[in-house]
Length: 256
Image (cartoon, rainbow, N blue to C red; front, side, top):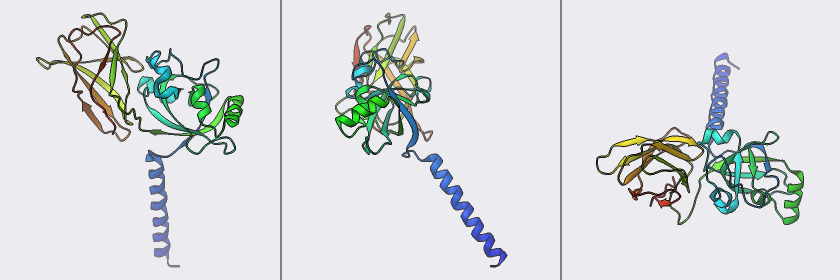
């Protein structure tokens, strides 16, 4: 074989290998291998004291198919993200597994997820298989991020109980949709459009001291895994007489 032909074949193989590596590194739909446990000493649903700040809402969100995450918590940015999780033992486990929402932070025995008992059981093919999975405690899994979907639900905010009008305002964001992260939040006065950037206190909780006055327009920055960003402005404003503990429907869904 001529040296030039050998070089061309080598170059072609090298480029194909590099392309394969690049596709593997950027594959947003590929599964990642890991391990998962479930909440000990709990009922079927998740916890109502999770580090995302959802409270009791976080225990029953997504029908109770929720989880604590370790690295995927990402200092709270990962709160509200959805993942398809499936165990890998073909004798016990289904191909589809279960779709969970991150509502808490935690890890156990080198796991990426601690699932609610309900979600852990739903990875199994049968009731007996579910009992066997629970007996194992920790199982090998595959997971990938998927889009969150809440039919007939708009993104909603709940004002924190510690909020004190007009000196301090905190709220948590419910029903985060799609597969993008909320990475920044602003409040803008609807009269003069002066905006203030909020702090992520923890999890999905956003806070500010001396909040803007009057009816407030909410602005949320959605960022995806490709680095694309867009500001979303809901159609409904937060009323000027907002109250601690109240929930407000933003009137918007973000499913992309």
